[in-house]
Structure formats: C-alpha cells, structure tokens
Amino acid sequence: MRLRACLLTGALALSACAPVEREIPIEQRIARADPAVSVTAKGETEPVGTNNADAADDPAIWRNAADPAASLIVGTDKKAGLYVYGLDGTKRHFVDAGRVNNVDLRDGVTINGARGILVVASDRNDLARSRLALFRLDPATATLTPLGTLPGGGGEAYGVCLGKGAAGLSAFIVLKDGTINEVLIDASGATPTGRTIRTMKLGSQSEGCVVDDRTGKLYVAEEDVGLWRFDPGSTSPVMIGAADGRKIVMDAEGVALAPVGDAGGYVVVSSQGDNAYALYRLPDETYAGRFRVVDGATIGGSEETDGIELMLGDFGPDYPAGLFIAQDGHNGAKAQNFKLVSWADIVAALGLK
Image 1 (cartoon, one colour):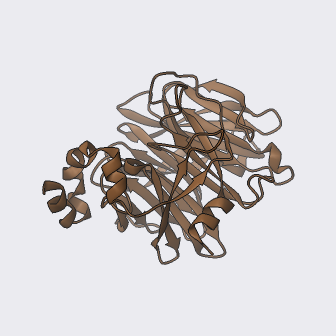
Image 2: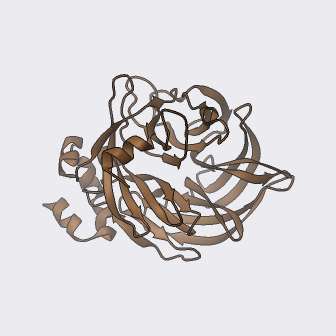
C-alpha cells in the first residue's frame, strides 16, 4: 500500500519511495511494468579489466563514414579508465584515467589547431571537485591521448554529454547531487580551456544525459524521479517521463538520442529497475514503447544497465540503420561489458516509423 500511495503523489515524491521500490523483487517489477518487446544483441565488447565489481558504465560511438566496419567504441571502466573497442568488440586501447564515470565524444572539433575527435569523460577522482577529462581519439590507431582536465564544479562528477550550440561546444557535467553545469570548451589552443556558462539543478541523484543539437534541448535522467528536459538557456526542468514503475522503473539511468529529420526521432532512457529501455517520440516527447535486450543463442542480454548510446547510420551488415549500445551489469561470470544491438531490430520489434 505504501508504494501505491507514493506513485499517486506524482514524480516529485518518487525519490522518497525509492527504498520500497528497490525492495520489490525484479520479477514483480517486470510484471507490473508496461510490456516491453524483446531484441537480442548482435555483438558485445570484451569485459572491462575490473573484475567482481560494478565497473563498466558508459559508452560513446565514433562512426567511420568511409568504412563503417572500422568504427570505434569508447567505454568507461569507472574504477580504472577508458577503453577503446573495435566494432567487433575487441579491446584496441586502454588509458589509465582513474575514476571516470561517463563519456561522450565529438568529431570535427578543432584540437591544438587541427580538426579531430574530442573525447570528454566525467572525472570523479576527487569526490569534492568534479572535473572534465579530455582526450584526443586517433581513429587510425584507435588510441586516446590525454589533453588535460577542466574544472566541472564543486561536487562528485557523474554524467556528461556534449552539445553544439551557437556559442560553440559545451560539455554538460551532471553532478551526483543533481547539479548540472554547462561548460563551454575551447580545445583549439595548446591547452584546452573551459568556462561555466549555465548551472541547472534537479532535486536528487542524477546521471545520464544527452543533447539534441538540432533544438539545443538537454535531456537528463534523475534516477528516482524520471526523465527531464531543459530548453536552451533555461534553468527550469520540464518533466518528460516519470519513474512511475510502469514506463520507467527506477533507476532512470543512461539517456540516448535517435535524431530523424529536422526535429523527429526518439529519446531513449534506461529503465534500470526492470532491465528495459523506454522510448519517447520527438518532437512531442510522447511515450513510444519499451524494449529489452534478452539472451540470444551466443550472446547474453543486458541487465541493470547504466549508460547507453545510440547512433544512426550504416555500421555494416549487422547494424545497417544504426547501433545501440548498452552497458551490461550482469555479464555471466565475467566482468561487466557492453552489448551491441541493431537499431533496425529495435525499430522492427516496436513497429516504429
């Protein structure tokens, strides 16, 4: 009865209900949630190096338009550093960056006077002072070169996402307490610089985020509450989807975007509490369905997913329309890893247009 009463009070009261929600067995959480279609992974990465721990967390994708099979994945081991994987899931490189939690990247950024691929991770090595750790990704060698760090504000770094606006490239660093700082980055000189140009606030622990460059809208997951939107220049959040135990089962974790046309597509959020993913249709941000990544013949499914990433486009015959990647919190007897899913399979399973 207490859980039912909490759910009826609305999204802002959900954080107070978190202990009760999490005490419900996973089978019951799945049973009471809205239905989710099933898809299977076409690939997976090798496990991260930290065993017997909640270690893998968040992926980012670089697409090689000239040779999709040569595309790369950057993934965090939040206890140790960053991995670069090939599309076949093999480890290509590791950089010891310590406790980096989330990661994002952008191609075509001016770095030290030349255009390249900028990788930005949320650095939580100092729990009292968040930082942004910057790297250059060399697609030819699949290696990361550290460029230094920038201050992200007081508090523990959790999420990060990049967005391109009129002022330039911004990193949105999400702190554990729900503070979100927009840091304008300039990596063109010998040493990267950054300055905070906007600060936003959600009421409790938050992490996953994504920016829609077409509209400048920022989407952020507040774990026990749901998915929010911040409009360009605004500090006032707008609720998109509540963690109501049906469409999103707390925790709301990773957030990803499938942009279609000028304003269409989907926002995807990890419904960690029932091992599912919820979609919201753009531009009206209405609920569009849910899916799960379940065990296949040779590759397992994904459970208790933290970070997700999604990129549309041709990634070869297994991923002809796009690639969805989910962190897998239970990778059998192995350390955690990332599962690779064809976006075409998700579209077909949900009957999306």
